[in-house]
Length: 344
Image (cartoon, rainbow, N blue to C red; front, side, top):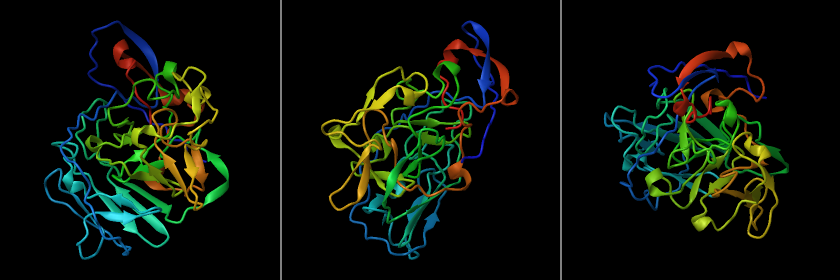
């Protein structure tokens, strides 16, 4: 269902301190990224009035950390309350931003009666330390989801979905618990198990696009113990203080490669359902972040709204990489072990 997107990066200036060997690199290279952000900003703006307008204006100054999300044409509201269960999209001016030389983080929220649209440049609101050849660059994300989601008659798998399955209230994409095909010994493996993520649970991909595979609702990552984002089916994703709710998946194999084959859903007391969420007494639904696989979402409980543009860009489908999309490269063995996903 997703267009095949195969991109190739050439790695330059790699240090050749250890034994050099030839490898087949597929469709992109990425190295371990790190937040590096200090806990310099504490809380979101509180007591924001609920937004009823369907327009949003973003104002930007020259400082890397002064892009403001404004949720009304009058400019009187700095944070935005919108979406199922009324999530708060924070004013990003209170956060330090990615650092000198990077664009200011920008999130523009359009809140309608039936839909929520979040446009973002994908820049972190905490310090970014470049660890990949591509680094971090502004994107042109735009997600639209329902504000009145409903539980579907059957769940929808995200196992082969190699693109965003959700987004945070700070405007960053969330991917599933699986990496891309590089390096081959860790193809489609669990990025948490393989230690490929920064201290906030994310890293950058082939297009210098930052995204999460795991969520930490802590102030140094600009997230609070509350609703941290939305899945593309419109249901909210909640934080999970002290991990009260447990994942129902158990590790039954080796997650180094193809993570979905390494975990089995068994359920149990105080565990979430297969999608990593639970239905509420009023018939609504919510996902929870968990400490273990699948970390954020295991499947869609509702019907995901199809996205377009950059927000829908995908990695190559599994097993569909041709010889023409690969190239021979010579890299340091230690660096190969730190390669991240191709287009996630």
